[in-house]
Length: 161
Image 1 (tube, helix red, strand yellow):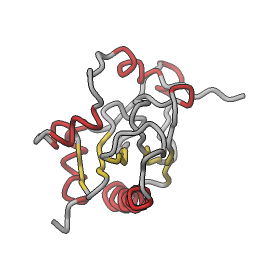
Image 2 (tube, rainbow, N blue to C red):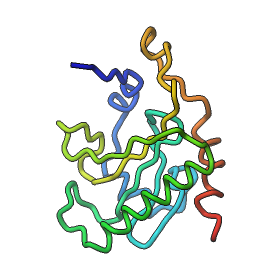
Image 3 (cartoon, rainbow, N blue to C red):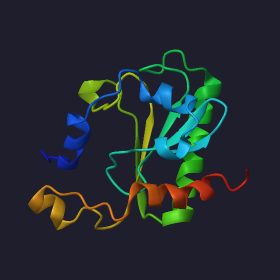
Image 4 (cartoon, rainbow, N blue to C red):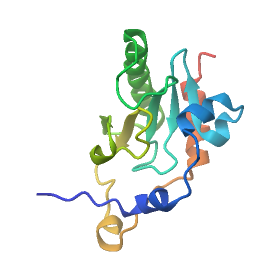
């Protein structure tokens, strides 16, 4: 069995949690840059992961609050997938990753950090992006500040607006 070490995630695990669902709260606020919301559609939006596994780690989130697929219409599910494809295209244009991890964690035991609100993770990957630092020192190297990444991605995601 292989072990995936993610010691940088302890910052998220130990951080003070919001009393209400951030995926419901953030889109209602007029603070997209501060909340790291990159792009909005009718039923879904793209938000950057504040505790990323890699530079450019994004999430596709439906506005409808559900922890599973229950209650999501076919229209919402379709938009989630089209926005996932759009996000991959935008990340490819902006950063030229060599691959992607894309997935959904349903339930705490499946690894859902925010288990109360379904979302899709998109993690861009490059050859060698897990360096010796992670293995030897329990340190994750994210090469760019998250706001700088946001400022690079925002115009790519919203080029037609």
